[in-house]
Amino acid sequence: MQPFTTLTSTPAPLKVINVDTDMIIPKQYLKTIKRTGLGSALFSEMRYRDDGSENPDFVLNQPAYRKSEILVAGDNFGCGSSREHAPWALLDFGIRCVISTSFADIFYNNCFKNGILPIVVSHEDLEKLFDDADRGSNATLTVDLGSQTIKGPDGGEIRFEIDPFRKHCLMNGLDDIGLTMEKAPKIEAYEAKLAQREWA
Image 1 (cartoon, helix red, strand yellow):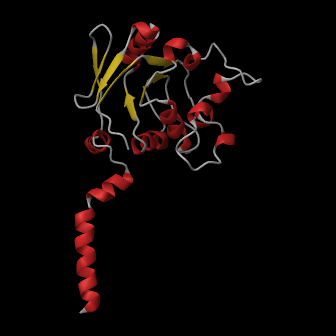
Image 2 (cartoon, rainbow, N blue to C red):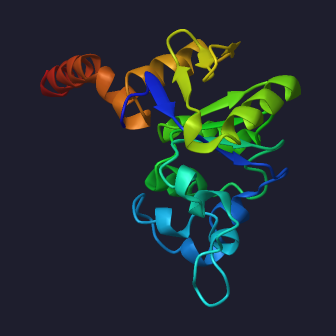
Image 3 (cartoon, rainbow, N blue to C red):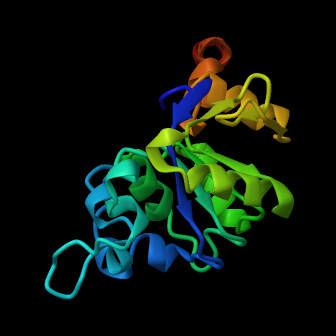
């Protein structure tokens, strides 16, 4: 998993509340068990018209936001079913950080397991971030996980809270497998002792 330390990007404003996982990645794309290749289907029902052409009104189709790595979203992001394909699709598109006032618990947990930083802010701070994001390519945000800050284009700073263990995992690129591998020496030592007992 790619470590997350600092990220500077033009933020994309998605001013929609209750964005559920079916909106993030519709059910017809859930057949795959690969984490890659889902970026083109991210928000597909909003991004594309019935004929398959892009909807120019959707934020991620607009030139300023096509390469956004930060998504600023409305309340209760990631609600609905527990599909892990939702953070897979976000990450495959290039989104490394999602900022909202609240997240569904399962989606929130799945983000950390896949290298995405979900940040919870107040409604007041979210409105400030939407204002920054509305400026398009003329404004960037810098998310610094070490200092737990979001720095705006005009020098303003917003602090956010994060569980220390999750922070450690993100900054060191540790998913569940990586955490297990950190304990490899202890596992090997235990297995060696077990083997000796079996031969005794």
